[in-house]
Image 1 (cartoon, one colour):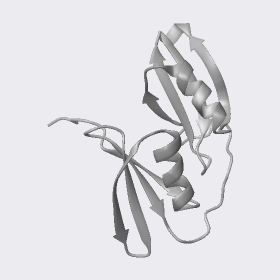
Image 2: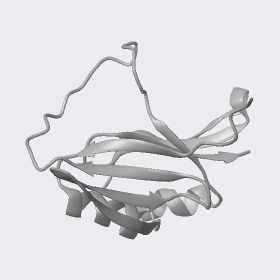
Image 3: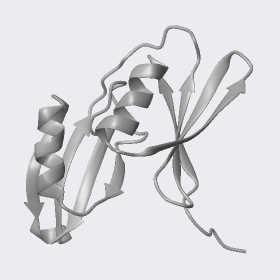
Length: 129
């Protein structure tokens, strides 16, 4: 018995069309499927063959909230990339809100940047030094 791979992360979204556009047009990920799910729609955005982001459109009000970095729960979603400097310039052109500008974290052996999606979810892009 073992865990084979990461399957998906589910995100409650405020505006499904805006979120789908952000993940597909800004981040360049492929929309793999749209599935009716009772009172909502699930939109699957593929990261790779085995992993996806699942966007939930609950068709109701979802409140934004901020919490301190020391609070429990998910802190961010991290995606491994190549060409992080190009990503940084690309995201700036799309006026994303950065929570950490591009920097080297030598102690981790990574270059990283963090930003928010349209729902306030923090996404990290990471590249090996």
